[in-house]
Image (cartoon, rainbow, N blue to C red):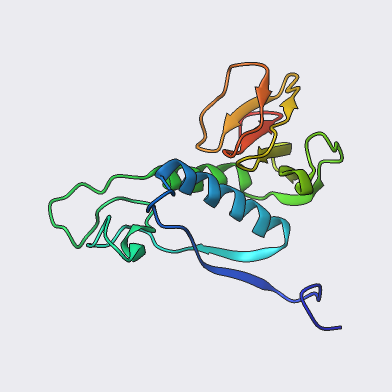
Length: 178
């Protein structure tokens, strides 16, 4: 048996989006979260981001210098190396995802309906089962009954407001603090 479904190792290399034009830093951070989660769900390992820091033509065209998880960099001596939201998203994914495996899509069609732009994935890790949910831009969000779950946004910040709805930025429903 050959093809995509074959049991071969998969690696995702040079994954990323530049902050340029309609892709702002928040959108970049949401896309990195969603893409890493989907790649992990497909069994990809490793998943590599391109590029650690912005280059010396930051903000220029072509936008090759704007893929970084950090603004500025070693090419501009004395400039601060400031983390972008995508760095925070990657740090949160590393924290929550360590030792976790994908267990499937959430069976509730009000939460997981890819054809309607809603995604809900479930993982199991050292701190129990956790879910991550999002809806695509331009699609109807889902209202989520979070119950007693700890809610964390895609940058690792606690979300206290209730009720919650899905958005392009993923939200995590955890049983306990990772």
